[in-house]
Amino acid sequence: MAKYLVRYGAMRLLGAFEASGEQRYERGAAVIARTDRGLEAGEVLGEAATETAAPLKNAADGQILRAMTADDAREIARIHEGQHEQFATCRQCIDKLGLAMQLVDIEHLFGGERIVVYYLADGRVDFRELVRLLAGEFQTRIEMRQIGVRDEAKLMADYGDCGKPVCCNSHLIRMPPVSMKMAKLQKATLDPAKISGRCGRLKCCLRYEYDVYEQLQKELPPIGTQVMTPGGLARVIGQEILAGQLLVETADRVRKLVDVADVSTPSEETPAPATESVRNHANTGN
Image: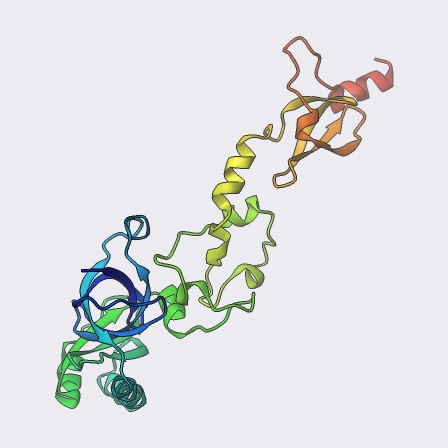
């Protein structure tokens, strides 16, 4: 049987699902699948060939049961409409119990096997009484999922500063670690307001080109290195990584950009540029 990559659930999970029978599905097809959580609606991303499925770690298994019908679509719309009322009920129960948690979203599975409650909290929350209240109210299994701010953006955010759908809610499989070091290497602005995403953390896109920048930087002489330029000996004081250029300073404190192809590392016998103290000593005639 053919196997397909399917995206499903509010958290946009990925699975490699077998198709029942000989049915074939095109990219973007809406389907009904059985996952490890129950019966769910999903979207086919393509065939699960070896090269496409290999990068996925711990991809869920499941089965595509059928293409989504008009009746299925109406049922999904009905479920989504009901989630607004379920969300309000859940928030009322949280307030009633005085729990230190922030309700983020409610996900009601297509098959009705469970309702997943996504929430933020600073620490552990004893939600056993809440689960009992909600199970009695909704007559189904309740699953509590504590998430972080990046996951909250994945659930709730729409568009980023670039004008496109946020990466965490479109194509990212895993949230990559992002650090200020990546922004500095790419010479991005260090203004937190400009390099932070909808989640308030550093933008995931800072991670995309970091490996390339890091590799290109290794091919450049480090800052502080003495190099021989067409104009003579100089010291590297800056790097233009993508342009393949160096900002250098000569002994007479002239700064200029040079192509890395035009510089070489001098031999040990080549004298280094005079330091400031040496120049001052020479100027005083001592």
